[in-house]
Image (cartoon, rainbow, N blue to C red; front, side, top):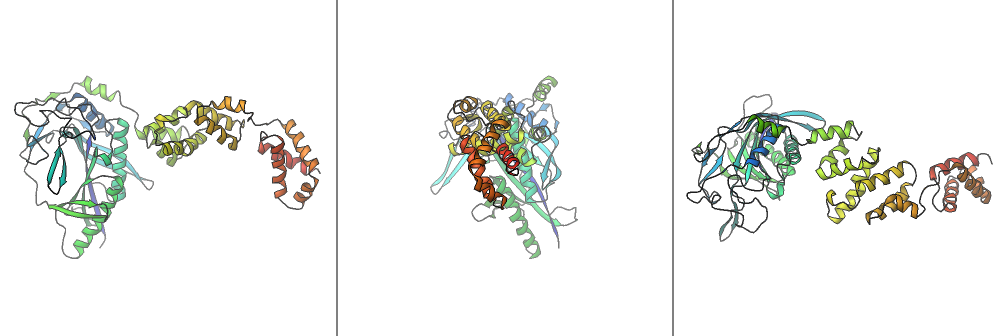
Length: 474
């Protein structure tokens, strides 16, 4: 029997606010445990939450980018459960009235586009972080109360590849919106994946399992591919699939059962009594939507259709905001996008990777690289000379000034080059005979002699052309 995988993804994404969702405590990562927290985060009696206005703005930005219907009346609910990472004994969330619903994004897998529906986006607060040891569990409340948005997809994905593409696309959008660091390795973006299988052609959902806290896009794909095969084997063996929560063992590349999930947990949701409903004005919402940053799809379209780059080149540039911004700045000083892209992706990237720097810390200014590319394009310097100039530019030299001071400008004067060609041919009659006898190395030797006489300044392409024209006459 042929099976079909059905996948839905829930993504928790920490927002890049300065303070927490309902308190004035600072948001931080990797700070000393329990230093960035206050009475509200710890759930002390008598404390009251206050909604973070910037978090609401960021949520609206995400809703707009994901083409969602926006709910202007902001309301919060209590999700009640008792666990050590939840100091209040409840979490403030938006169960009944999410700020955004009915969105979508388009993914590209192997050249084919597919629309993935997004059910909802709601705001909530994060929990504390637990550290489990042999002697017990330690808690760090720095994370407690950090603003989150949870983004829930429709079960529209059918493979691990599609799921990975969805997470990558969503990560890229949130990154360019500047609402989150989206660093999965640091936990600022976390994925829970729901997976089930069913006979191909069936419209009935199979029993699903939830894979919790996947911390990389590659692991999303690997976990789904393993879980799909595991469920198919369980069905065909007659064992059946159990509804349960699982985790992905990165070392063994398998999913492992954590706990059974027999039915929906009763969280006893009810409206949060300490936060009155907040009506967002049309002016407030419009102010957010009128100041949206450029999204990755828009930038990709510009790179491909305006600059003529390939989709692969454009995707690499867009992988970081700093890189695409640097490339765009370089293009202010040159019209050769292909050459500029090659220098950015190869030479500049190699230097930055070696020195562990970002494009914002690049030792080569966009103008310096643009001037260097312009000299290559104008054949003022050869590609070989450009490498020498580039090394000098890395230490702070001005490319034009360096070329002038070191007499590197290529000689493209046809009359001057013809004199050099004639001199070399007159001095090497045997090489002329060798070339006419079919020995191609003779021509390379003669060009080399021209370059030597010009002290490396002769335009090698022009010198070769003039050499060929003159050698046939002899």
